[in-house]
Length: 115
Picture 1 (cartoon, helix red, strand yellow):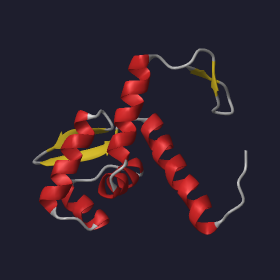
Picture 2: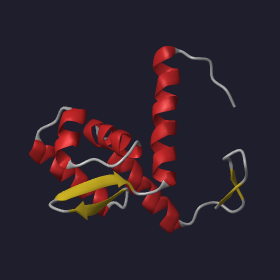
Picture 3: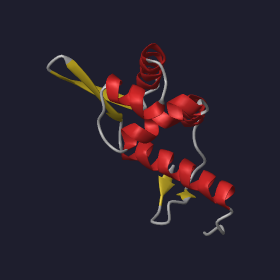
Picture 4: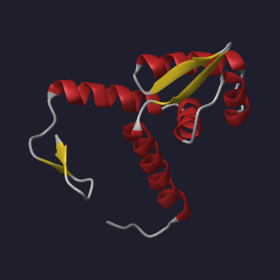
């Protein structure tokens, strides 16, 4: 599926494989803690300790959610000494999270919709 400048899909419909991967990504985003984690990770790298504080969840829960997000290909990590730093995998994930939250902002704040 190709995109033009407006971000609107063009061309052929998505393949079955593309739909399956997209559904898996949306499934991962359907959890509030994972969405909060991805929001933080879309804005920079963080270790587990910082993420625990940022999302207000217990360390074991954050670690489990990060493992699921990594398996789904939404989060990447790198080692810096003894610390592991996590980040949103790429610009597509960052844009997806931003759009989801901006859409929610329109719903919650009753901000007029725009094209």
